Length: 392
Image (cartoon, rainbow, N blue to C red; front, side, top):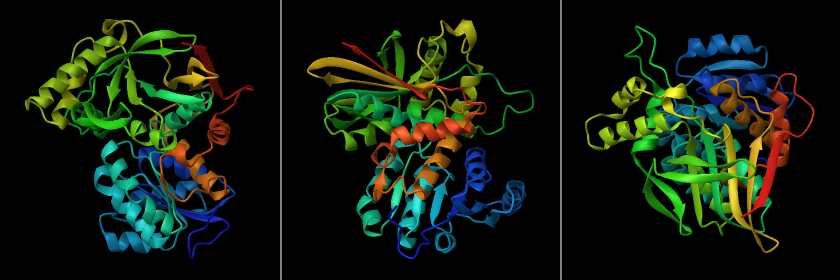
């Protein structure tokens, strides 16, 4: 890999912001066991929490109390490491800030940003990153992240791609346990935000303003057609940077209809000013018929997949890709392990492209999925990804 100025070229020192959090813990565990890594710095605003987790990880890990809103402290911390993994949100506040500090200190950067707004802001730093000899991979989790690389496998099966969709399944929601009704729900609030604010999608070959929760019909080769709903995510912003011929791109949610209709009702209340986002994240949990058969038939689509449509050998063709072997016991695994895999690919020289990129702009999907499958216990033999096609 191209090593940033002043950085040690061999075993890597990696700092993880928000390192004691749910997603970051899986990345830290994977890195602490890797031969390529010399040190994992678990940084967190809560030093005691970071220290307790670092002690669990063993001799390669150390803790650091770090408030990333303190720009001087952030830059000082990055001076001592080769790579930073940014897991500290919200990314609309800290994405560009941490990436900017990484560029200033010549530190390679990866994150799990799944907001479209800071994605655009960070892409603006591409030239500065190249000039500093920095590789930055943004949105390297499940969706975005794994989803982008599935989309690349689909598009690699076409001579020209006209439409590309990334998609993920939402399970049923349950009311909080008694006594926890007023507990903040960061994940739920983030989801509501992505479904109620104006978003960007790719349409007519350009990025345009749109709204979430539009319903479309999506076909997967060999499975069939079912409904899916638009979500505000980074994939439609970054995928056309590597395949500029793309005319249409959406990130989509698949779920039982009852859940999506309830979400639409809640979104309407937010847009009307009746609810703010935190209140909406709690209100959705008390909507009727949002889980199980009461919410309607289950979707025919999978948990995480991509579809691309275009031309192959002069014939209109649809290609689908989905992982067959993937660590997915919980959200921490499905997000944290992809981040760790990409970081280790960077350490091994399997990611060399300078600048700021979505995963598809820097990560080889064939290598990535093979390495991701290694985090599955008792991994079965056989292919790790399904790629199927059909004529349209």
